Length: 463
Picture 1 (cartoon, rainbow, N blue to C red):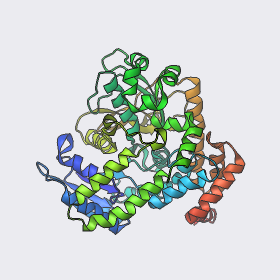
Picture 2: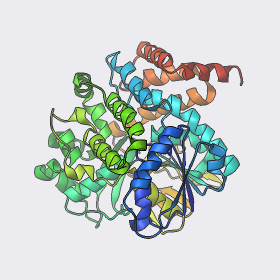
Picture 3: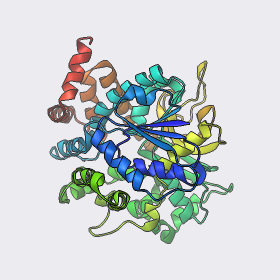
Picture 4: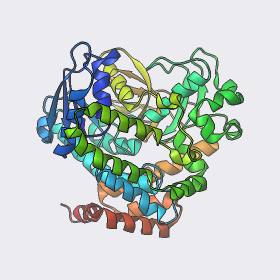
């Protein structure tokens, strides 16, 4: 198999390569093509891969390319993890919102909408290029905001695009360990989870038939052993009757999260930008590039969601061992390529798509059939099929419907070049809720990212 990674100079690419060299994914890929528009970043990641400890067996041949057509030709599978605007863009995503007193986070709220306005156009270009150069290939998308980007691509690629994120599967694995019943990779039997990307809830955990979740929620010590338990607290979790995805912290504790981010010496985006600005040039020259990269990776993971922890508090070792998006992506790839079925939480249309169109049953009652949702799916060589979930309770469904409307306005803004839809997306978001703020936010992001103004102009002029 030939696997191409769009965004091949990305910081986490060595994790994909390492997973392809050992364990259950070894031998799946003969050729790994790293494509990126930045040749210097490609050179740095290539140096890390060359310096990685030797793997048993036959690791994939690695090819680097800055030519998209060349990289796609003959490809069987595409992983996409791009960041238009780079880490400098992430700083603006956070800062424009924070300067207006709003949450500044890269995928949630205003920053997530701004990120989507940049990433969706580039991903649509990739999808169209795939139709031309590798029409039978699958696209596994983890370009953020993953659910929104995936929904924008479905009209182009249909069921050939699947969105992934590791936060939901990480939550399930942590909950299963805390409940004393660890789950095998790719085995989510008895798991009930509904939501959108970065906006979901684990409401059932019954790997052996008996639901372990009520007992876990009642066990203070067990909850304290997992990140989400400490993040939300037992009182809140008992009231909810479920375990929220960690990103719901930004909805349930918005003021606390925003104040904590504003108190930090620098935002998460600024920290990562500074780290990578010095790291990438150093990797090309370093005698031990892998060791340098791995140390940076560890530091980056330890700083994740720092605003939700007390000053100086460190992440637990068990929370750092979540498996990662690379293993979710490779589990999907293995199932799609005939390696046997897998059950994984993925981002797919709410109703399975057949040759005749969506079927009647939806996975999440209350959301449109064509809306991309994040739910457990059965993955086979024929695609990813969402499994029916319970109808979400009122507060959960209302929030999902609200955010889905924001996602659809954002997609419409890009696809049809409607600036008013972009303003509407900002204004309608539950963490913003003001048309005046929507106008201010979009103006701020247009000043930071001039391509947004060209997006409206280019579409309006019919070019």
